Image (tube, rainbow, N blue to C red; front, side, top):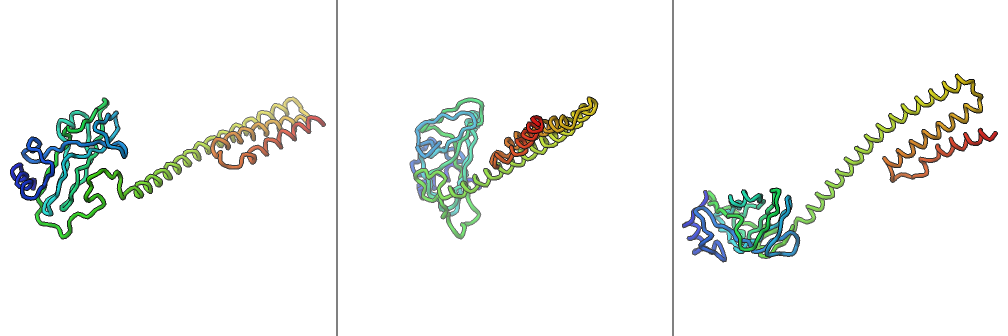
Length: 259
């Protein structure tokens, strides 16, 4: 159950629910948070420009001390939704004392400038059906200065490594598909060229020497094409291995020609 304005005021007076409380920020069902600083990196700024799809964390002026019988929800103000912002925020649990931090993202096609002192979000206080057995004791308790990713940096790093590995696997599969297609095309070209060349030689009553020379050049050219494909598809393998058949074929054709 969301508590209303006079109940919020009572909690402020009796339990210091909101430090740096401002009467003008009190709404009928919540309290508008004032921005103190913005973080796109570890450095806080009093104003920040968001290009389309860029994000920044917002630090509130207010410090909330959540009672053990309530939780806090952060909601984006309607005017900011229409401005082109979206919001990501946690649920503030019973017993959590902290400044409020939430992330704003520019989902519009225009540039949006954020300023300290402006109001972007409202905190709503939900009354619980009963007090939980344990109050909040997570990684971001008593966060009065921005901690960034805090204790979850290693988790995010592992996730990024897993994503990068999956990306590499997809690239490998893609290269393998392209490679197979190119190999099939090369085989068809080789067979067609081999048959055409030998039929033409037979029609012109070519000698055995001419057969060896022309077929050596043809096989060397096909081997050269395969080597180029191999370099593109699997460039990390030993390069010299691709060129051995090419050198052998051309060398054999040249020696036979000289005889």
